[in-house]
Length: 404
Ligand SMILES: [Zn+2]
Image: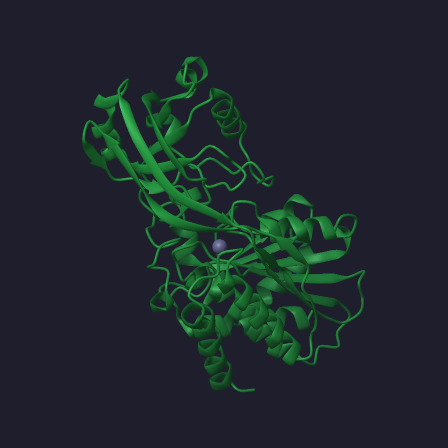
């Protein structure tokens, strides 16, 4: 297959994932269409496939209104929140001490300032969950508040490029919540102690999702696991986050179609990187208990294919011999360079289990991860993708995996 054919297939894969399928958040129809498409393509290329399933709720956002002193405030429903229709006195907590010592029973609680500076990790997110976040969540659950309003700014590291960001995004947290901008929060402060009315129309919809695992080769004692997350945040086509990673896996599946090397190659569409409960990642970790030792290397693709700058490969705990071979191989690809290490991706799961990993991304993505307004927004669309980058990465990975 020549480069033009691979390029055309890349265009087809990305258009299917980002245009034909309008959204790929876990639990949605689109997510199930995306995993079915990935599985069918792998099967068509002669890969053995498995699709381990899990339950995952979807979310319908019906909007929210907040009234205080006859005035209407602009609020957004926190993703996956329960809805509410409550009148109550407004209270405020700006930091942990105020949250600890205030009496908030039966009130509507405004969280602003220091306590609302970064997105709280969901209760079920075990891979990274600071103690302070867990403490805030536990305190909120013990306050007896009727609902929560958070006033937030930007938190590119944890919440992407959205403004304001939802302080709480957790389908396992059962206090209804909404969020607003910091400016709107300032305007609300004069109403502390006064009665306000919050109506939020929000619905959790039971659903399901699956990972897709394609394998070649039968040496289960020596596995190379190439991963990319297939889900996207609600409200974004998720082109660079992470349809481009899935397209790399599919082009690689084509290039490795006839693989007869000494390893088992696993191509895994992980389903849940951008979803509060990371169900696909949890499912994969559970299924691999006692088997991580057999993974020689993880290669995770996330944020690849940005149209400016180069593709960035970063390395984590690679054994010396593999590291040298990798550098030698990548030197042949002019659009690829060594990039800075970054922790916010599924490669960190493998690193936590002591496995060597390579993260594949874009220079732009890793350099600006804390300072951009594209990820998790409608701006993450196919206009920012260079399809040639996808083909080049797949070719480099083919080179790597078939020549160890
Ligand atoms: Zn991602």
